[in-house]
Image (tube, rainbow, N blue to C red; front, side, top):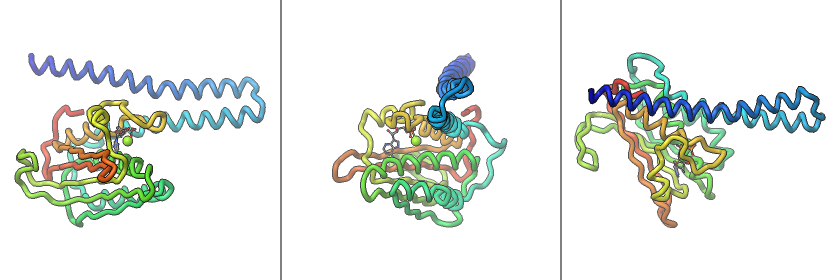
Length: 248
Ligand code: ADP
Ligand code: MG
């Protein structure tokens, strides 16, 4: 009955979340629907240009939200071998132009041949979220920098003395403004964002769920100190993870 209760609790949480996500996506769609109505009921050419522009913005907002949610859906039943270097190099290539326009330089030091088992599309989602967060933080200052590193970790104890199996430790570091204790506390909550309309507040929440499902862990170090400001996010993923049943 303990498990039944837990399952019920989980369903209730899932239901509330689904409702709030539907709400978040409904608002921009509703706006688009109204804008289309205004255009079809005879707007001036200037208004039409303006309404089209607004509709486009609302739609990209809805797409932004649905994109951040994609990682929640399991792509296949069994995990497959994922080459960490190829995954991260591929992501960075895709994001290159974006980093350029943000004025952020990105460096990568990931050994070739480092492999772990997992769900590739979900893991790409995690590191896309972390790297974009880092770039967004770094872009606030001149000389914004992000570094992505990875290392094979032999079985042993983590810095906190918790035993872990063999795996990969992937770290995304930025020299942005860092986070206050209040932000750190709410980081993983769905819809928590300090970016206003620009953020969805889903990135870290989705990432946390995917990492947990992979039996991994995530650690965040951050400083708002004027000298040492910046954030470092480390993700541990086991080489042969025990995929957590019902983690999604
Ligand atoms: P979003 O990026 O849409 O705001 P996230 O879940 O990705 O949502 O992040 C939640 C919040 O955590 C961000 O709004 C920001 O305040 C904080 N945060 C995340 N990553 C960083 C970082 N690298 N540096 C500073 N703050 C960060
Ligand atoms: Mg984000």
